Amino acid sequence: MASSILSLYRRMRAWPAGGWLFSRAVCLKAPYFASISPRITALEAGRCEARIAHRRRVTNHLGTVHAIALCNLAELTAGLMTDASLSATMRWIPKGMQVQYLKKAVGTQRAVAVPSRAIVAATEGYALPVEVTVRDDSDAVVFTASVEMWVSPRPARG
Image 1 (cartoon, helix red, strand yellow):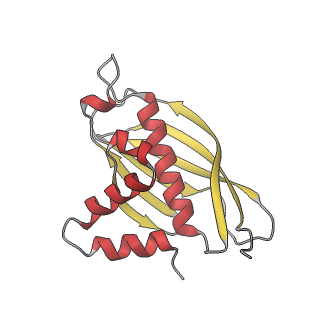
Image 2 (cartoon, helix red, strand yellow):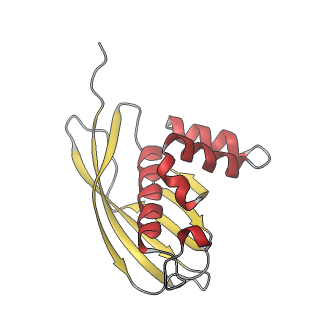
Image 3 (tube, rainbow, N blue to C red):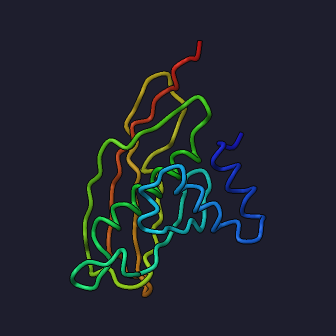
């Protein structure tokens, strides 16, 4: 059974401008992500892709995409991928992130998030590293991140 976020994504993608609407809905749920105006371009269990445009609001004093905008994009894609991959009995929260800035980030930035190991339902919490790679318009890797997600069972409602 698909997660609720994945079901919503699949439903909305069929609508005219559905991808844009889904991206806006994500930003309504988690408002800080609106600061980078992300566009979710693919979402499935085990993979999320998103992009941000090079625009003034994400630019630093050097004229490149700001490092924190790239971190924000990494956390967004890692979180959506994790959420889309979990059963309804599990939950997640980011616990940490290690990043590497490899090249000046100029132009549209495209992020892909994938888990570094299998995502499973469990009776106890566990760390799930999610690897995110960000590429520029020339397909060069400009940034990588390893986002550690803490995955655990949802508490029983009672």
